[in-house]
Image 1 (cartoon, rainbow, N blue to C red):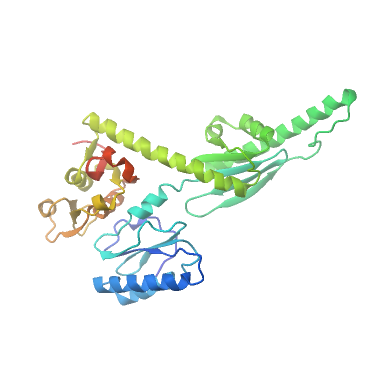
Image 2: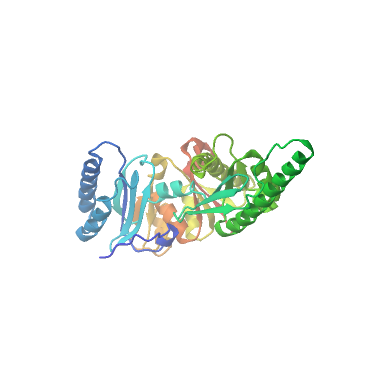
Length: 367
């Protein structure tokens, strides 16, 4: 029995043999006995998993993660197959609802829903000397660096008379030169990190110089935040709102594309049966699932391979599966999408009317 704490991506789970443990354990709390509360929650989850048939040695391995889960985050996510732990995450927010299961396919949508909001971003706090830059990346590999320019003549003086204008111009020239240095390094980091946004704050004049000196591909990513955000720590907090709005816009764009393709009777389909059929044929480019437990819990069927999916036992028989297993449609569809290289989008429950029956797909091609 082995465990892994490597940053395995959700997509890398595709094709792993089942059955699977799916655990979303609430590890939140500030009270002194939070660790004891987490232990009690895990004990209840362990009993449920053992009753469902999960191996005891696997549960022992998972327990080692639960013992140190608090205060590492507010949700401990563990996905394991029958042999080993495949993925471990600590999420910063408590789960909407705790979840524990041992079944033929893993429960991945809550994790994917969280990940679709974790966009890479560069945060820049700039002044007339240079800038502090923080790169925040979904895989946790954050980077911080300082770009410092020439400070000579950087402070405006007021000597009066004919020399005042000369001193001011020297200061302006130096600020501009420093902004050029920052813009150059920022362009390199944009190529390296591929951020969804560059959130910039600091001295108003320095921000303007930075915008003027940035190439169009960088300038198009700039989001200036107003207020007393003269440090990267404060700007990082503000960046969360920028990224939230961008993530919501990304989902809205997918929904618009889905509606447009359905309106043209072209590259989109909806409903359990049709969507699962297109997943089985590897046609799906983007899977849309409405994040509403009642809809996602409806039954579907799967075979030993993740692309063997269907709405009925007969659909699986037609795929050559002798003994189909029943599982929630949300899990079956997600698992098939990942196995066939499709993107999965969790659609907020308040937009359920945009996706008939709560499940749909934008297709790569039509037959």
